[in-house]
Length: 113
Image (tube, rainbow, N blue to C red):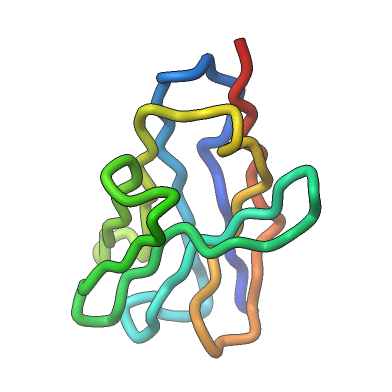
């Protein structure tokens, strides 16, 4: 049985930091490109970071320089370190092993003063 668990969300003030984790069981995340997506109050999904099986990373302009995605293959986990958080980063964050068809429940990030 495949399970994806996102964790690490919470409430922070603007300028704060959080690190999200996506831990899998039943699949090996190292075999996949893994994306982090978010769905904000407007309900539109946005990809915020990607890491390929070879650990090449990609970021959109909205998160470049503030977010860092990294693998921990020993723990079968992909982390998303988020710094200098802004109100517009408020969303539910999901990880997506691309093409696997599996999603977790997401983790809420709220940035407000």
